[in-house]
Structures are given as C-alpha cells and as structure tokens.
Amino acid sequence: MKTLFLNPPSFNGFDGGAGSRYQARREVRSFWYPTWLAQPAALVPGSRLVDAPARGLTLEDVLPMAREYELAVLHTSTPSYPSDVKVAEAMKRENPALVIGFVGAHVAVSPEASLSASTAVDFVARNEFDYTIAEVAQGRALSAIDGLSFRDGDRIVHNPERATIENMDALPFVTDVYKRDLVIEDYFIGYLLHPYVSLYTGRGCRSRCTFCLWPQTIGGHRYRTRSPESVADEIGRARDLFPQVKEFFFDDDTFTDDGPRAEEIARRLGRLGVTWSCNAKAIVPYETLKIMKDNGLRLLLVGYESGSQEILNNIRKGTRIDWARRFTEDCHRLGIVIHGTFIVGLPGETPETIEETIRFAREINPHTIQVSLAAPYPGTELYQQAMDNGWFVDSGLVAQDGVQVSSLQYPGLSHGEIFRSLEKFYKKFYFRPKKIAEMTYEMLSSAEMMKRRLREGAEFLRFMTGREDRA
Ligand code: SF4
Image (cartoon, rainbow, N blue to C red; front, side, top):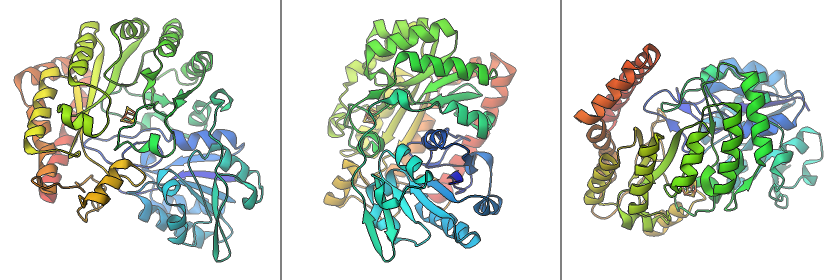
C-alpha cells in the first residue's frame, strides 16, 4: 500500500509523539527526530515520512496528502491524542478509502479506548510496531497480523501480541529515511550542536524508574542492542549523507547500560572522527567515561531527577546521591559536558526536598539543566500510584497550548506549588554569578553560539512569562 507516516500537526511548537519522551511545548524551540516513525518507514519501500510540527505544517497543509496515499500511520501520544484524532477524522473526510492506523505508547496502553474514540481510526499497532506496520503496508489481512488491534464492523478485535524484536541489526538504517524525507536543520535541541542527527543503537532499559514511559510500554526492560559494527556503519554512512552535521546523538534510554559495548562503539566512532553524545545514568565508571571522551564524546544527558535520596528510592531510580556527585566530578575532570535533567513533583516531594534538589543541582553544576514536572503517563507505575492514592488533579498533562502543567499534588504540596517551583528552580540555577559567567564565556566562544543563546534566552523568558500568566 502507498504509505504515509505522519507526525501530525498539533500545538504550535509541540515536540510531539514521534520522537520525544515527554511530549510538550518546550521552554525553547526543540524537536527530536521522529525516529520511531522513521524505523517502519525504512521497512516500507516507497513510503514517505512527514514531521508536521518540526516542518511547521498545519492541518490544511497535510490534508491534501490524504488523497495521495492508501495507508496513513500517525504517531500519537497521551497529550496530543484528542488533537491527533481530529487530524485522522479530517483525513478520513478528505479520503474515505484511506486506511488510518495509530502507533505509540498511548494506543499500546489503551487499544480498546483508542479505537472506540473515533471510527476514523481503523487500527492501532501495539508496543513495538515496526514489523506490524510493515505487514499492514504489504496488504496482509489485518486479522493475520500480530500486535494489531482493529475495527471489524462494530467489533474491536485484538490480535495476539507481537514477539519482541531480538535481532536489532536486521532493522534498516533510519538515517536513509532522514535523508529522503526530512530537513535536518529543522531539528533543534538546546544542548546539542546544530545541526545534529539522533538515532537509537538499542531499545529498552534495565532500570525500573516508576515514572518512565518507554521501558514500561514500547521498549521493555532488556537492553536489546545493535552490534558495534552496525552502529559504526550507520554513523559512517550518515556522516557522508550529512556532511553539515556537527554532532550525533544516541537516544537509547541508557546507552551506557552495557559498558563494554559502549567502549567498543566509542573506539569505532573515534576512528571515524565524529563528535557524539548520548544518554547516561549517573553511575558510569571513570575508565569508561575516559574511553568515550577520548573517542569523540562531547556531552552526556543525565537524568538526576532529584537531590533527595528518599525520592530517588521512592521512584526506584537505582542511583545514589554520592554516586551522582562522584560521576559528575569525573565528567568535569574529563571535560565532558553534562545536560542534567530534574523532575519536581515526584512521590514524596515536599517544599524541603525541592530546595534540596535545587541546592544539589547548583552544587554539582551541570552545564545546562532541564526541569520537568512529574508526568504520570498511563502505562507507568507512577500513573497507577497516583490513581490508587488520589494524587491527580483534573488538569491533563498539558495546557491548551501544549505546555506541561502539574497534574499531581500531595498532602502538604499543592499542584500550584509544584508548578511554581519549576520557575524558581531555573532562576536559582541560572541567575547566579558563576553560571552567568560560564554562559557568557560560552557565547563569546563563537558568533553562532552568541546568536543561538540570545535567541534561546529570549524564548525562555517569553515562555516563563507565559507560565506566570497560566499559574
Ligand atoms: S534509567 Fe532512565 S531510561 Fe531507564 S527507566 Fe530510569 S529514567 Fe527511564
């Protein structure tokens, strides 16, 4: 079937379902690659991938595409689901013969409800959907495809589960699809060099953090990996396809989970002479960090989450504050840049633990930070805990404009206090002499960095002003 893979238009600037872990409009213009859609697109010859938010496309822009295709696969998320359904309905009106399927964690968790929401959605592909979609595109009967839930007249049918992919090397390169269908300059992440390219070298995470969506839905708790040869082959090819790329990012949940493999990949990347970055847990030994740094590693994206050991224990992070301190010192010593991520409003949070986390962030001093509000996604243990304990406030995960809102509160800590603490966190971290000096020095390092940081600074201040209006 002639197939369109669509990351649908949504809230203005929405870093949507197809790439980001926590879908929302960010403080500064940010877009992750739609890698999850690019992977099945690489399995379907002649298909096309359209990333509407990153391209700035509206519903009017994408509607004519409905008439050009036989199958449309839309990546959805919990925050964008109502709006994605409207896109599907409009496409169905445009071309009633178009078969429309949804993929993503939201429909994997609630296939029945997702299909019941609208007759415009013909099927949903649950969990790991790459080969499920490839088989739909081959024109196989929907009833014969594992991992699929579909509409059969008035009935909704759930086929057996699809086996988890074990041979990750069998998946074709996503970067060929990026080259064919995307404009890589559309993709910005504040802490990555621009333009960057991101991809996965494996799926799944061994940790069991209660809030974390992907390992509890699509990826699972085993780290299933591509071989170092395959990773180096794709990066070598991508370097030739995109000579303008300044940095490659490995978006695996925890790239450093398999230390010897990370070291082996690093050595191969070192021979290619590329600059690269990845996600890491704050427990990587110094020796591994050194090998990665010596072979082109520039930055680590580190989920510290909290400066309170009690909260880390509550969310089953599997790290310790003293380990995180040592790891961060090691990175500073080696010259590895850190973008640290923190979450406010996790179970056990109090005004005191928020202060503790802010103090911790200032003390360990990652180069840049991102502070998020705890987001209880359906399918996670945090969601279930919030249901069981009555922590939800009736707000949804994002506001009308796609900006994250606080959807949890606890006895002694209101959702308003959690919401306001985010701004306090950013101000206390960035508005201090040491950090201002660091950022100024960075801006003076190049005219391009100066331009970029000034733009991001203006976006950040506009965003914060908007939040104050919303609070
Ligand atoms: S270590 Fe990171 S990716 Fe893994 S479960 Fe925890 S938050 Fe998720």
